[in-house]
Image (cartoon, rainbow, N blue to C red; front, side, top):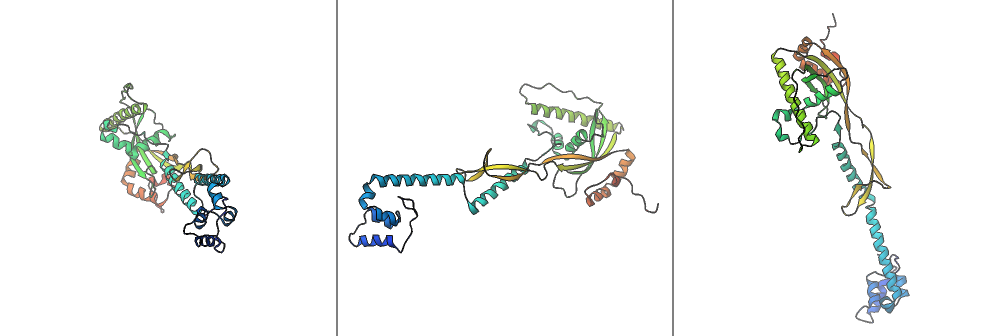
Length: 325
């Protein structure tokens, strides 16, 4: 405890302060202000020697010193609160902030090839909602936008086979994609944007009409025995922000009792950068329908081969030659 007058720490020097209070009680049954403060450890031994009881009660100089000391205490408490916790407590709060910010950064990761989020999904049929949420819609975007060796202009993309990479934690990580391309014989009719529609809602409606037309056109061509061009695509998913970090400048929020991110500060923590997933096309190959039938017949064997190594090649889709031949 500190002295309310001088601010010095009150220490028990051979109980000299308490002895003063005891000696005073021998002469009277009630303690005056000075000796009451001595007993309550409010003033140090030096101040107890310097001031009489009347000084402590009536002196404007003592009252001024007490007021200044109270102001200093309030300023110190305010500064300490603003600075935040220290030592083990500070490390604990920083650790909690780091966990929170890292979890949030991981949640903010995004894929370059990802269908637009459906708005007002109740106006679409269940088959389309299932398609948008499925991996097939992502595979179509990969082939259409990233497989530069495949000309998809004027073509519908139908996903024949899609295999998720073995033991991968990412839903959009594929070991291979097989697609069949059909000429666009039916043309979708797009309506004008309605006044009450947002841009996102209009794009959703256009995408839905395109899907309806493509589904009907592909189905019609299949019933007529038309076969499209078939391609194997080997994509590789990678994080462009791998091993990259952001500096989070932080400050202590005294009201909410935690650290928060600010624009400027003299302290920061390094938080993993939100993932940005993109696809590199490792290889593409056009195959005929006879080769496609071989792949479909031996699909389980081909998939088991993809489990053995991450960097797969097109050779696993071809019949293996006997060593003796």
